[in-house]
Image (cartoon, rainbow, N blue to C red; front, top):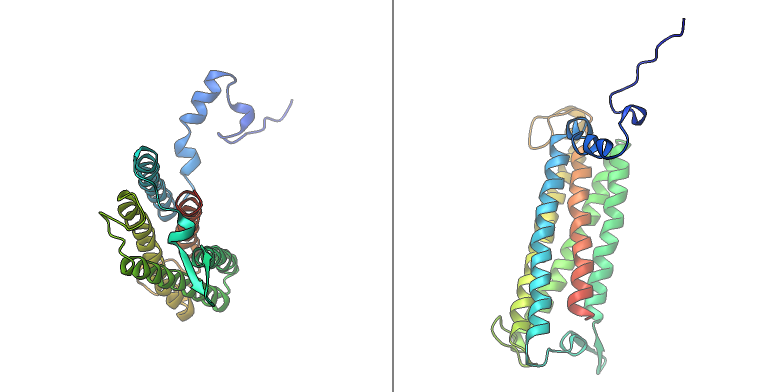
Length: 240
């Protein structure tokens, strides 16, 4: 007699071939997401919805730029800074991009140490990420102040097409709001990690499960998304 071997329901050898296999994959949502936490699933859904919003903003920007009959301002001139008597194009934007991309690295390391339950390094790296994010927001505020003083408004600007001002304030403002919210959340979570809330099962906001650092990973998902969106804004708005 041969001994029968039980295989799990999601064993690929038990899936039908062809179109029936495709249908089985599409209908396997319960098995696929059974072990995914509620918080992580909700964050992915939120990020998906936010992707559509940012996508619509960038599509609206591209439509306005390609359809306007007035000359579009040259980003190298608009976003130039005068340093040592010389105008350097996009220098501030380059520094902002470097700072934000660097914050993704510190956030990734924070998640890594969170998995290891090293609360000291996790908290410090989350604080470093928050500092880099706050630095980015501060430089963006300086950029806004500079352009407003030079006459840029949502309805006009001294360099050409009036749609430039509305597109700039809408897209960068919406992204800057996301970064600011992320900085606040990073500070709150870093404080909880540093106090040991995740190790002591102290009741509170996202800290009810003992020894569970998943909220650090969820925060990292949000932060990496914000950084990725900035890459698209940088490419479409400042380099095009």
